[in-house]
Amino acid sequence: MRADLSGLTRSYKFIFSFPSLKTIMFETLIFSFLWFILILSFPNIFEYNILILCIVSFSLFSLTLFTFDNKIFTFRRSIALFPFFVIWGILYDFLNPFSVAVIIPPLLTLFTSSFFLSNKKHLKIIFFSYIIFISSTIISEIYIIIAIYLYILLLLIVYLRIDKRIYKSLKISGTQLFYSFIEYILSRNKGILEESLLSIGKKRELPIYKISFFNNNNLLGNIVLSYIHPGPFRDLGSSTLPYKIIQLSLKKNIPILYLKGACTHSENLIKSDILDNISNRVISKYDDTIIILENVLRKNVDDISALHFIFDKIFLSFISRLERGMEDIPYEVKKHISTSLSKEVLIVDSHNRLTGDKSFDTPSIGTILADRIQRTFNISLNISRYDVWVGFSHIKIKENQYEIGPGGIMFLTIRLNNKNYFIVSFDGNNMIDNTRDYLYEKMIQYGFIDGEITTTDTHIYSGLIPGVEYNAIGETLSKEYLYKIVKSLAENSIRNIKKVTSITLTKIPVSSYYMDKEKLTVLSELTRKNVRDGLFLIGILFLIYLITL
Image 1 (cartoon, helix red, strand yellow):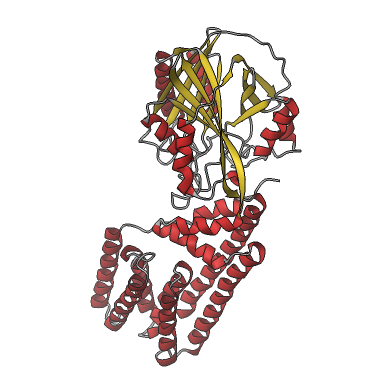
Image 2 (cartoon, one colour):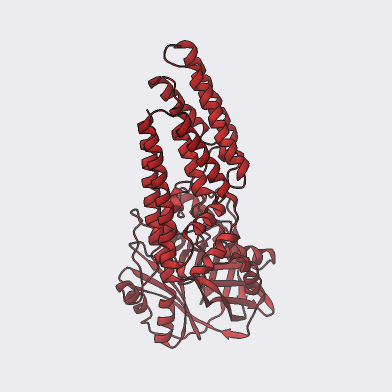
């Protein structure tokens, strides 16, 4: 069983950002000036006292947020809804005579924000005091008073359900987990969230493999294959691991090709503070295990395609799906195939196809897809010994529009028996349907015998763009633009090609806390329910606006 994270990943779409402070101030001034002009033009409809009441009260409420929790409610965030509140005031003024009820919906809106976004108890108390004072001394409409307290009761029920729902299943405070998430999103403090996530983690050991190519004593470059999943998102956990390893390698002038192994979100590291240590170990450690490249061949089983680089002691196998999207290949599949072949199988999850409907099939153990992957290893091993040549190249991309991560694009040419093979690795998360096929065909036309296009599956941009889960490679960047870059990398790679005199295999074990599959699945489902309850609460708040009118 794989971890179903759709409840978590789809919640990324609800992450949003407000406009710049200049935009907020400009819109506030424009709408306030418009209101003032309406009052001058239609004095029998619009009133000064409503304008003054709204500006003063909205300023007070916003200032309260900023004063008592400016870490979460920066000045920009504290006044971000001001333009909307002014528009609301204009609408209310047009439809109603003067009433203090005009400030109730904005007050409840900011009270809700303080309740769910800040863990400062005194901030909640102050806003609740505002509500009690206004409703008990100034508001005369009984139906509005009833609506206020019914909404507060509903808010408390939702709040307590979030806390109880998660605590009952995972034995951690749901509200504390939520607050730590909000603090990470709004203030970039990931330490508290990572500490909270330790409660749903477990201690494991996962490997990172390194295949190193030497010309005598000169290191020509490394293939790094990580079985630590680069997630869950942004810079949390192991999301930045590909970039950190790539960056350190290039800083030391060591060419690199970074690849994603068979791993899922269950293989996410929880603590990001060990990534630098892992990167240093990966780059600096070298074992003396000599391996020999004997052959390269491709085997297709239905719509599963495997490009095997066959060494005397290992398989380095790139797995792709040719027709539909495929979810992360589980780590258990790698272990199962290695056991069945009695040989170390290093599976590369190419992660290079995202169909239009963004649907995935999961190749878990026992599924048809997993069986097809295993059958690609039913091959005749023709042992041959030829000279091996390799050439690496790399480029960072600026015009990536949150598609290509800071690790850029890596290219490797492997020459065996005077035939050139290629591997391209994009530091990105998946690839739009047919992008892989287009680039593959172009590389074959260029003169390569075979090869593969992969992504690192980095989650560094996940949840970063408001309303977007992530952008796959080719979503905003054209295939022609991508090919232009890849072709340039191919030329540089061939230009840099050098003869290999020895190849070594290094295994770097990483023992730490990783996300627990079962608990992660439970948290995802609970998040789905919590988001549903939150949207319901927003719907009720919208009704308060309508009732007040």
